[in-house]
Length: 321
Image (cartoon, rainbow, N blue to C red; front, side, top):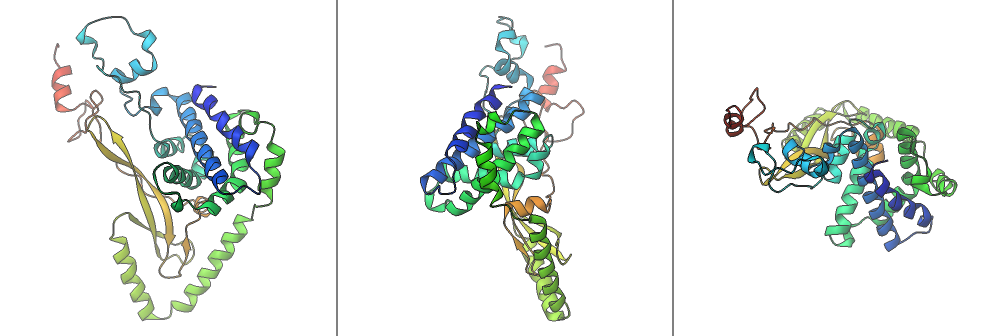
């Protein structure tokens, strides 16, 4: 068990010990914060087990070798060793951890919108006025989703449940079970209702033309993506929140992905904001096209280069220097 996964345990155990159906006020804020921190560390642990460089903002060799394996380096004072003068040990954000881990973790992929919600909550608690924190929403998330989500991670990774629940799994299972709904039935009824609504409206040409116009206008605004509505099968709109991460090589932020905030269809009036429902419907967004970075210095490549290096590094490393 690597240090990231080890460090996640105390946060999960604190939640397991203190969670109950009567939690309120600051208890909910504190437990939500611990949930977010514990999951961020756990996801980094999943990535670290595959390749330790996957958690670093600057994973290039000349930086990562010094951050991860400093004891392996020879004590040389030779500029030809091409090592970063000031190694950067900064690691990726919670959101980037979700984006990366979903490629190798089924639990992460199936629950990514819940995880993004927790990332949002952590940011609100740390950086914003607490009046923006939706207390009842996160109380439900804690009571309903904490146990099944971490049970799924336990099953997926073969990490014993004691790491997550510290002997409280029976209590947590009982709390969660009372809040579980038949999501499949709920969504099926929701979609049926909106299919029926669309069937009553589709015969009105003026209504359809107006929704055509409105859908197009909304789709042309920033951070929107058009998908097929899961109810009426017309065009619906995903409302997205861009995910950015600072790139120290260029001294600026780069967009690394998108978080789905809402699905809305103008035709049948379907609107979904619940992260659990969005996860169940398996709504996907197009992958953000990330710029190619130089394999040596990490700068953005202006054009495709077979060497994977920027012009300066290509010229330097292609010589005898």
